[in-house]
Length: 164
Image 1 (cartoon, rainbow, N blue to C red):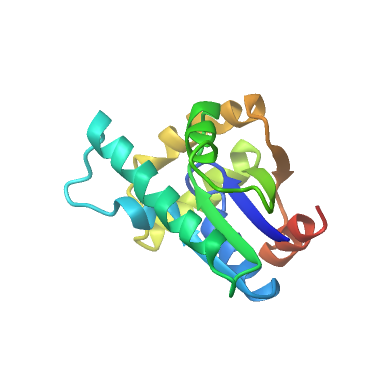
Image 2: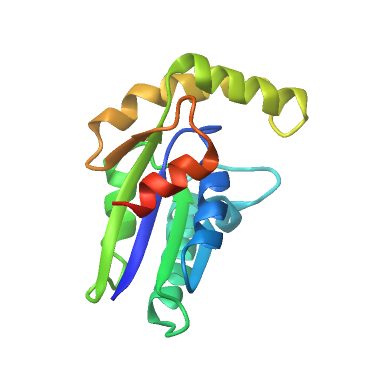
């Protein structure tokens, strides 16, 4: 049986880094970052582009789910509303698949520290802190397994996910 890991969390929480670690640790695994399906300049959020990105994500995830080479499919994206998760899930062929729906969370100080480090290194723009911190509480309302990443190593978070 295949396993699909849906890993959500606010910007800077460590979704991509943890997902890359899972890809290394899990056998026959493949990783998709939702941001790769919507990497545009200028970045435009419209009903059309939101529909397009969900279509792109679901097309790729279903391709991975149908490929016999993969047992573990890892997907991460900023999934801060249940409706986003539901829109993706309803389009996936998960009949022979275990789904682990996970939200990575952290306390505000840890998140601010991570984002500040990203800003200092030029990975993110300064406006990300307020937007990301504002979304912290939204993840508590989701029907997901919450994993607190505060003061944990990437490997520790990946190990916790693999124990689910």
